[in-house]
Image (tube, rainbow, N blue to C red; front, side, top):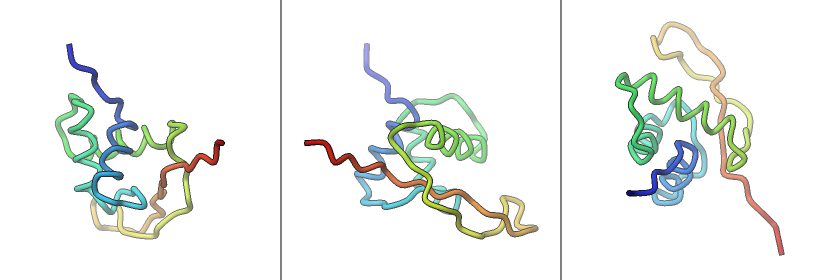
Length: 92
């Protein structure tokens, strides 16, 4: 039996592997790669992206660092997209 990563753990690993400093909806390649690492079952790419962002929002591995104003997925209007970064620990 293999150990599966959670979606949030998959995002963290993908960000570390690719040297990404932030995760947001405007970087779909990063988010889709993270979703693949978790072995999820969603089919539509927008659902996969939404699942990764929701996992980051609910995880203690990430913190929200503001918003980026960009078009929505339909390209019809500008919205604020949340931006997530890895939490840094300063434990001794």
